[in-house]
Image (cartoon, rainbow over all chains, first blue to last red; front, side):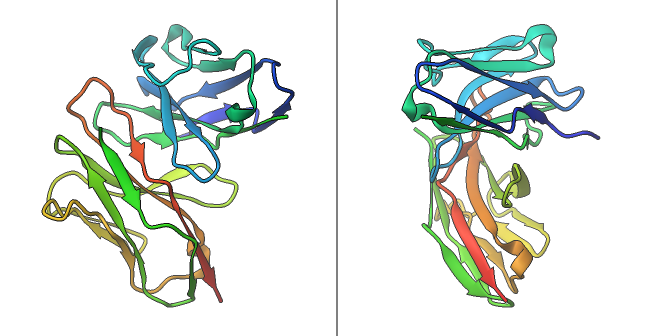
Length: 113
Length: 114
């Protein structure tokens, strides 16, 4: 079974630019998560989708971050405009059922200069 | 709110040494507990989990026991190898609410020397 796919793996942008990340979850997994992992910290949830509906986006900075999951499969996370403090690894995870294991993708490392 | 505290690293050990990485948690409900591992250049992988008090999770020679009385889930391995060098994250998931988010500790870097 293929794992969670993410792209790009690395991205370097200047502050105030925009950037988008893509995630393809494991086939059949209804739940999709985006986590932000700042260097030296554990991952923190940004947003959780159940199929194509949002379950929790309480920690998403909505003035600059947006996310969507069209058709309940792939998802994109966008930052516009980026700030220096957005430099982090953005992890996507998917899960089949509510109590099943969350499987993580390799992440996208974002550097904002 | 719920939180996880784990020992700071780096932890540097010689091959075949005994490993303990401490993890304690605070939760209002009855969480499931996890250890995830992140090898260099790779994503997070589930190492082991325990879903209720006194459960022991085990995998690849690693073990951790869910201790409700001490709110702990310490990771242990009897004999580490160079290939165990990675960052280890303790996490909890309280399934009581609508969200299933994992709450992670800050991670502990383990470096095993030959």
